[in-house]
Length: 168
Length: 149
Image 1: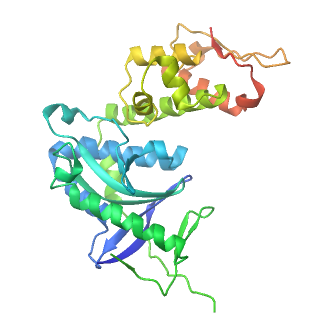
Image 2: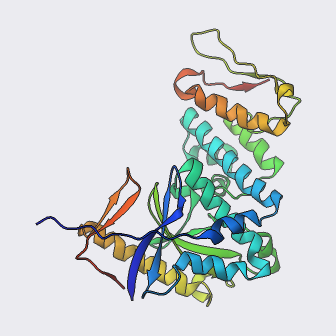
Image 3: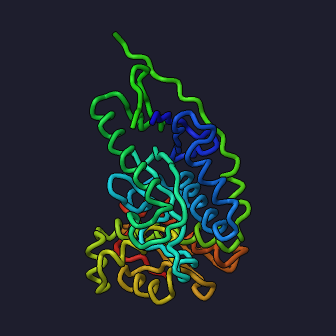
């Protein structure tokens, strides 16, 4: 699986630059795929808007701090911990978006879905996205340690060197 | 040999803003307000030198319970906000009944009084209250008590 990290130009804010990824040169980034799929579901529209507004306000005003995200193994998820959407009362567990918070100014937004089981391992919709997020997070962390990827905090930039391929 | 950086081609996601524009107004306000309140609680904790555990102990709650109040996107109840105001010794929400905010400053007899009724929307008073404190670099300058009168 070849991963290409790209900055999202419309999600460059004062405090945070958001990124996403292409998998195997697919036409859509994972985050765009998430938005497009969820926007088609009537019961997800409000939750999708709330997650996106949360992302926007963190980017504009606050910076991406750990407490704004739910820690999920080596990755993160939104909404933040213990938030329950109204739909949760009906037995579902709400929308989940998996992401990787590299620093207070750099976040990679991935993919997600409606969670239908308490444990993510038991949710057929979310588990593939969660699994990708945690594996990618570990891979990126290793690449940072090996200096194949660098984080330019000041310019909110992920630097990937030309001779390095991010492959999962 | 110097390594060359990969050129990362930016992507546009117009659907992002569209999804926010499609939100009901109350949902947008909910997200904004909950983040503002959470951030303000964080600032008050920092000013008071309190850790999450200290606040949890003072409230008789678990740290997990307190962390959900500080994450944003939390549906605060008036009861939980009242408990937080009592534990932090400061107002978190303001209403027009609180006509003035008195901010005592150490060493100087300066007080900032904001006439809430002059503001167009009473709700904005709470934001101004927060904003004013931040602008004054209140952490270093103010006394430990921030009283809403």
